[in-house]
Length: 134
Image (cartoon, rainbow, N blue to C red):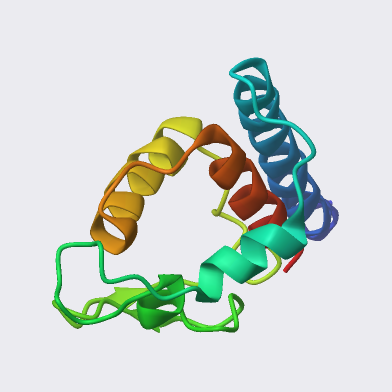
């Protein structure tokens, strides 16, 4: 009986996380759409992911790839602190995209750090679509 409970918990945990990720991401996309964004596109998110900018807090060009790598299933490393960053892809890190406040906090910080400004609702939606597709 105990083994059956453990197996059931192990098999259903990823489903719960996947459902949580979907609900949070869908809510954020609806919020962005309500603020004027439309037609979210993972391809545009991917293009911006790799686009270098000198507008952030550094004279060196940087992009999302600078810290998060091209492969969102891999761990990254912060360019300045060297701190390890867990994978962004929900397929590799089930904790990703499950907390709207956390997502918004990091969009705010990372967009300013990389692009020298806050990302638009359109850009956030495109990024979310890109991250979800990995």
